[in-house]
Each structure stands twice: as structure tokens, then as C-alpha cells.
Length: 179
Image (cartoon, rainbow, N blue to C red; front, top):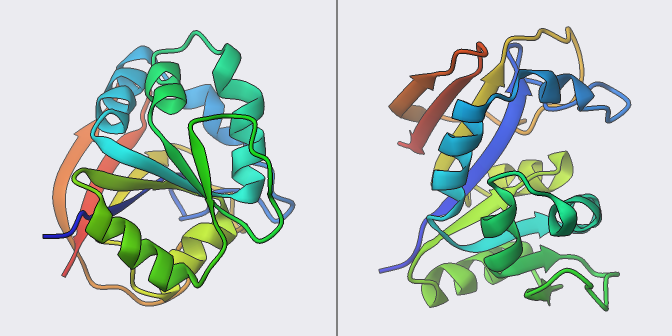
């Protein structure tokens, strides 16, 4: 049995993870202690954290010195970075995958005993979605509408809601499985 691939993304109520210029700062004003606890619990379920090179650099600059609850699983759980240019990752434990995305994901699914948790960025999430590799979508919907921006899903999908949770901050966690 293979592990499932979960995509965890934060987004606006109109489905954008960032504005047209890549700014996602609107997301961070709605994160409360309850949402951090929920997120931390879900982070610990992963056997591997997957991400693209750009997000890796952002996270590698933040998590090693953070004292927020998600820092422990972000720092301790091994990471796989999908990149053809990154050669010497400084934030470990980390390995680099530079082959065909679908082939690499399928290999990791077969090798892992726990779920694979994909963190954006936008282009990485779009690639996973287009290739129909994502088994579960964990979307944290923030009470903000952008009107335009970049979405993590750019292809039609049929999904089944399996869980939801509303946080006091107005953020709603929605978990969808692929039908």
C-alpha cells in the first residue's frame, strides 16, 4: 500500500494563495493559537515534507530559528525538495529530487509508511494538481477576498469533503479527498 500525498495550502475565500505579484502576507494576520495547534498536529502526521525550491528557501530562512509550535515538525521531519538547480540544501534533513515529478512522487509514495505532505508554492502545487497526484487537499481558507491572484488549483477536480473546522480567527480548515 502506498502513502497518500496531501497538499496543505492557505488561501483566500476566492481561492488565491497569493496576489498577482506573489505576496501572501494577507494570510498571516488570521493565524491564531488554535489554528497553529491544528496545523502542528497535521504536520506531525507526515513522513516527508515536500516542496519546491523557492518555498524551500523561504522556509529554510524562517523555521530553524522559530519558536512557534509548527517549528518542531518542520525542522525534524525529513524534506524532499523538487529542484533541478538546488545542489546543497542547508536546512536538513533534506534530499533533492530532480527527476520526472510524477515518477518521483510515485516512488516516494511507495517508499513512505506515512503521508507525504506537500507545501506550496503555487507552481509546485499546480504541477501536482495537473498531474492528478494529490490524494487529499488540506485547505486553510482565510477570511480575505483578493479578487485576483494565483490559485493552487488550475484544473477541474471532483473532490469529497471529509472534514471541516472553523477557528475563532475566521479561518476555516477544509479537508477534501479526491473522488
